[in-house]
Image (cartoon, rainbow, N blue to C red; front, side, top):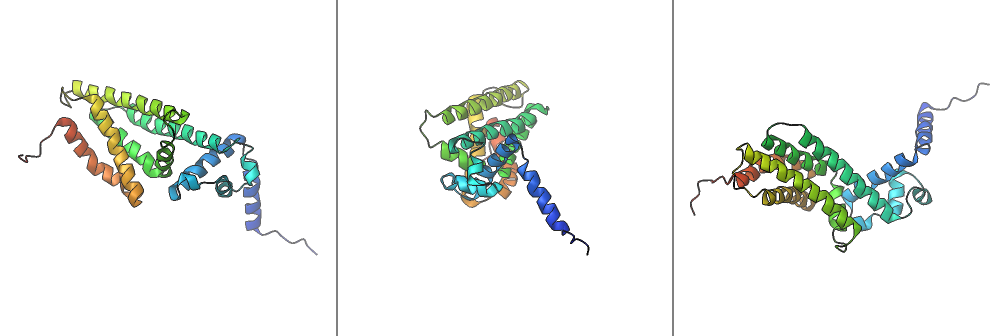
Length: 222
């Protein structure tokens, strides 16, 4: 009598399970970070338990702590990932070249696109920003935003040199407005679950932002 043949679906499932068990420590940590960002899309950060993270990636609760000593370390890894990934996305937009205002528009859409693709990120950031102002997280965010703002100021100054923006433009204030506009889109998407429409909204809003930088008048008399 011949031996029973194991169904192909079970073989594939077993291979996938075995592959998951062989994930390296770095791969597993990346999985945890991705799970936190995904979970933050649908629930408040306070509601993201370590058990929920373990369930999302398919490991035991105990196995989770082989890679992170505690929940705070997981959150720190998430913020490191956000800083690195957003830096790559925005950095690529800056590096692509072109006229200053073309670069500015590319950076704007790249930033909005990153948030639209990872809607859990702003929820995590806003939650953590409510912690004491002297926390290590606040310092990390200050450095990240400060460096970003400096790059925007340099780009806006270049646009002034090229005659694309008025010579009297306050580039510091313009950079703050740029970042505030992105944050405004984030708040709107969070309130109304409108991540899918963020890119379209960004396309409509950016020309208005430029009009503000240029001091463009609509023809309406006071």
